[in-house]
Image 1 (cartoon, rainbow, N blue to C red):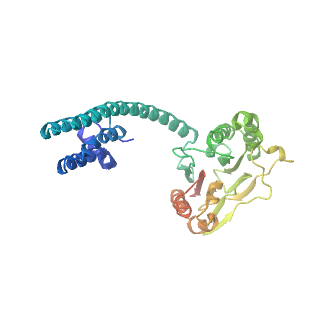
Image 2 (cartoon, rainbow, N blue to C red):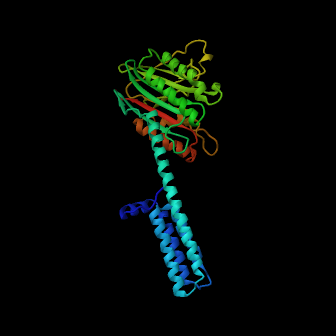
Image 3 (tube, helix red, strand yellow):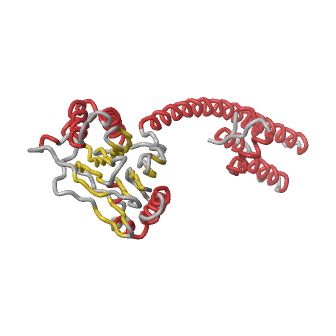
Length: 363
C-alpha cells in the first residue's frame, strides 16, 4: 500500500500515483474551514478525529502523529479564541484518536513489511517453477503467454517448458485438474520430471511414461484428498534441429493448431493417450503423430483455459476462427493478440488459468 514518506520528491511521486493519499489533509482542511465559517452551535470540530484515523490507513507513523497534533493544536487555539471550553472535550478525543491512529499505523506498516517479504519469496519461487522459455532456439522463434486465475499469482495449474536436447527441441504444455496449491504442486512435479527426462528419454512415448510415473508415485501427497482425482492433460512436441519431420503426443489435451500459408490445421490424432496419472487405462503405448513443420510454419499450443473462455452469452472463444486471421505474425504478436482477444471476449473476466506457446520456424 502506498504511503506518505519523509522526503518531498518521494511524497510528490506517491501522490501522483495515488491521489487518495491527500484525503486526510483534505478532510482536515474541509472540517477546519467549516468550523470557522459556521456558527458555534454547529460543532464541525467534533468530526476532526476522523482525519488522523484516516491517516492511519494511508500514512506512515510520523505524518499520522503530526496531523493529529496539528488538529489538536488547532482545536485548542480555537477553544481559547472563542472562549468555548466545551471544545476541549473534542481536543481530548483528537488526542486519544491520534495515539490510537499512530499505533495502528505502526502495526499496519509492520504487517505490510512482512507481507512484502512473503510475496517476494512466493514470486521468486513461482518464477523458478515456470521459467521463461528462450525467445529463439536455433531456427525456432518462440513466445509464451501465462495468465493465472488465482489473484496475485504468477503460476497456477497450467504449465509449460522447453528443452533443447540431443533428440531435438522438446516442448510440453499441460493443465493439472483443479486449482490452488494442490494443482501448483502437481504442476511442479510434472515440470521437474520433464526437465530431467526430456534429455534422456529416447521417444515421446517414453517421455510421457516418465511424467506418468511421477504423478502415479506422488499422487497421494500431491492430491491432498482422493488420489484418483489428481491427473493432468498434456501435449508433448518434438521438433528436430534439421529437417521438417516433427512429432507430437497428446495426453487428453486439446490438440495444437498449425498455421501454414494462411491456412490453419488442427493437429488431432487418432490414437491419443489418456491424461497423465490415468495411464492404467492404456492397453498399449500411445504412438506419437508425425507432422511436417517447415519454414514459415507456426505452431500454437494452448490449454483449455483458452478454448473454454466464455462471453456474457456463454459462447466459447472461437480459437480456430481467430487463428485463421491471426496466426501469421511473430510469436510475440500472436500471443499479444490472443491475450487481447480473450480479454475482449470474456469482458475482462478471465476466471481460469491460461497458457499458450507459439513457435515459428524461420528457416
